[in-house]
Length: 215
Ligand SMILES: Nc1nc2c(ncn2[C@@H]2O[C@H](COP(=O)(O)OP(=O)(O)O)[C@@H](O)[C@H]2O)c(=O)[nH]1
Ligand SMILES: [Mg+2]
Image (cartoon, rainbow, N blue to C red; front, side, top):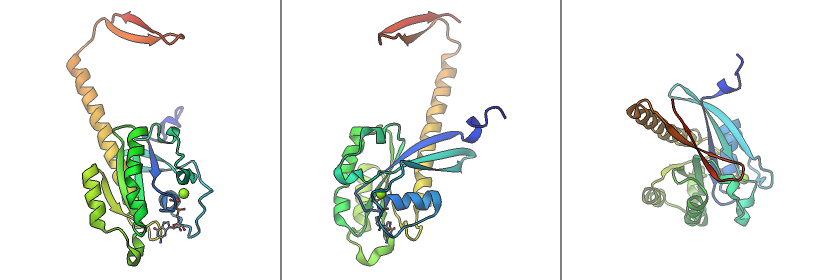
């Protein structure tokens, strides 16, 4: 029981929420982590992140989901927001075409600031307002296909596909990570016992110092 903290989860995945202001990012987060929805817009009150732990493939996966505090309105999301993120939920509002048209800008932002292997799921939110739809589902499908993204229509209000959206992202991330781990294991097995391995150790001045060790 000495390492209880370490045993709390097997994996911790950082996921970022992005998309225009008002599309429902904060409500998607509160629906997923607290099963809550708020009709009023409280765009100035933002949590830094919220977490939820799930089981995937017998492993305990903790999703740490980051929300903006409204700074997307000023296009002022800093690179710290994206740092270390392995997944992104890119959200638009199916009743507001502008939020769909701005997706290219968000994708560029992701390409500039996030890891190139980041898993992205496109979410057309407010699917409960079909009578006010301004973005046909086919257009979003086409964009998702062109950009290599997964796609779902969601409703934070009706709790439609919110759970599935996060589960899909986490599954994709998990598969990528476990494949990488397997490849690394195989490579290590192929290499066999290594003699005279060199490793680089940076000294305090920032230069590299080579240290050689025999096993
Ligand atoms: N009808 C409907 N309204 C939603 C949905 N999700 C969010 N909203 C509303 O849209 C507004 C903006 O939501 P918010 O989560 O603050 O958006 P954010 O700026 O992207 O974080 C609020 O008034 C929410 O109640 C949804 O799925 N359906
Ligand atoms: Mg918000």
